[in-house]
Image 1 (cartoon, helix red, strand yellow):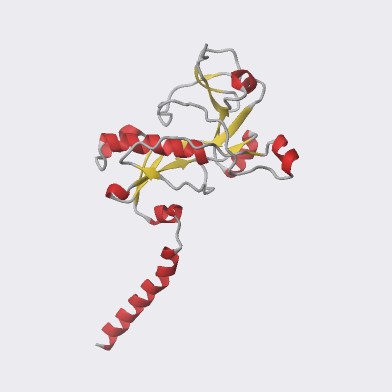
Image 2 (tube, rainbow, N blue to C red):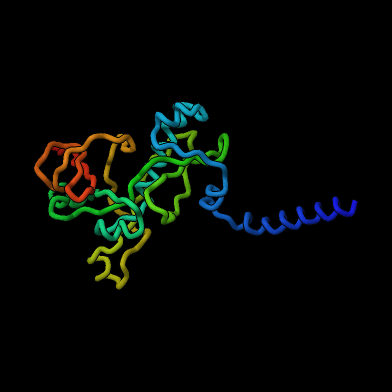
Length: 220
């Protein structure tokens, strides 16, 4: 009887110790604590059978939008890869394709898949990226389409940003969104090796240094 009472007391003390942490946990912390499943591709999510095809589609598109809005952007590949294992180049819609060829690219961690946390209607989809550096993703629902982009983060290490305010960047700065369409870029595809900014047909390429880049079709 004494042993049983002591065990119960220890269990109650452990629960009491956890309550303050759970009370102050934010959405990102709760998402990290919840059981989760990781998928590299949409078709892999569907084949697993835990979610419907529609839920897998919403999960992927919503996580991709979360990535576009909250992933850190860097002024150089080297700066990006100090924090993340592998980075890719993006072009800003304000500078256009020509500025991309003149070095007007920014670099982001590579988007490698999605992580679905929680159960039922409380399930949320979060982006999975290269590297061990934590990014404050909060996740989005998998039951409805929430692929709106509210803005993008400022560029880390951009010379103009340093000159204006004496700081490297404003992490919440809003910026133009680069429309990527609904291309599932976690699928491995063979890529032709071309230097960034080369005069080539629209498509996905890799430069001699291993940086993947995408040339969009021109709009007339």
